[in-house]
Image (cartoon, rainbow, N blue to C red; front, top):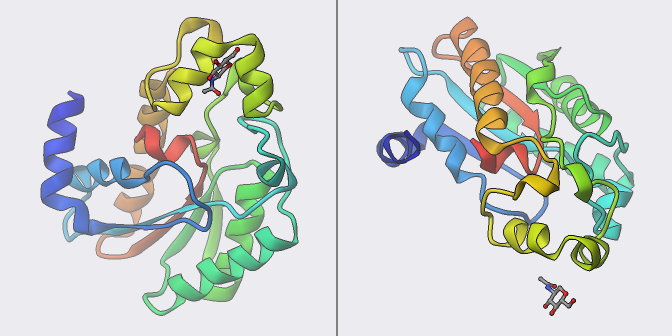
Length: 197
Ligand SMILES: *[C@@H]1O[C@H](CO)[C@@H](O)[C@H](O)[C@H]1NC(C)=O
């Protein structure tokens, strides 16, 4: 199924734009969603939230609810500026503060409604949450090695499986897309959730 998804993604990748303010693992897997989008095609703008203090410290967040910092708020304005030219039918966001506050800034700047959808929350990162690379590698080297290689995390990570994350994100995004045929849906979610798609 993953490879069928990837094939479709290659054919239809142009329907999804990724706007991500911070360097992190590729968000391009999310392009697989393009295959399922209603016709006339809805455009999805997939965004990661802006920076938080934990991002700066290299602490993984998962479901920990850390707010944007000042840089993160400026990044939200940058996302808004990038989105504004093409407009937004709606902005849909994860309920976690860093995403919903990024989304609120984008929605406000673009004059679009903001909707919160819990299915867009970050992946639970289990034993990695609240910890830096060094701290994780010290106690769970196999978990850290898998994370770095973007491989499925071993069970002892106690993290949400990426298939489960991808399934709930896809459901939320497709539902929003279906409500705005030929529109432009801006989705604000997270750095581990986006590549899971
Ligand atoms: C994890 O720590 C071990 C030493 O305990 C080290 O050899 C290894 O390179 C570290 N791995 C990463 C990815 O930092």
